[in-house]
Amino acid sequence: MKNLMEEGDVTLTGGHYHSIKAKETLKAAARAGGYLAPKGKYIGRGVAMGYRGPGGGTTSLKVELGVEGSIVIQTSFFEQGTGTYNAQANRRGGTWLRSRSDSN
Image 1 (cartoon, rainbow, N blue to C red):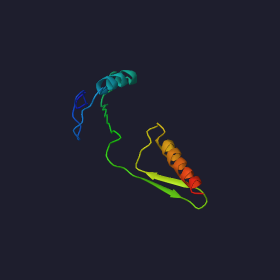
Image 2 (image 1 turned 180 degrees about the vertical axis):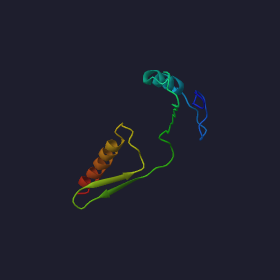
Image 3 (image 1 turned 30 degrees about the vertical axis):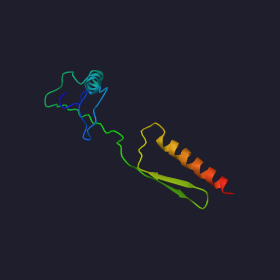
Image 4 (image 1 turned 60 degrees about the horizontal axis):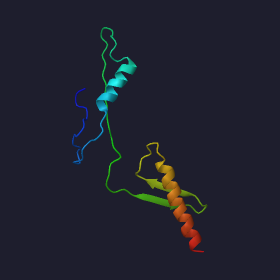
């Protein structure tokens, strides 16, 4: 349980962690996985826990339009399972389609 983030700890960028459940999560995982069960001779155990937030600051997005009508989006956003890529594709594609139809 050493070195786990706790409520109010300061981030490298000066922010503060809130609603941290690292210790509770690690304890629940240890119980569920049998981590505390007796182990055999010459058997060791270790656990690591990490966190990487989505970050902040500036990012960019590049849209390539193919002559055959394809749209390729390159971005530094990462997909965390919440539809980030789909949202970008829908938003950028919709904007491009509207601007094309408006110019005719």
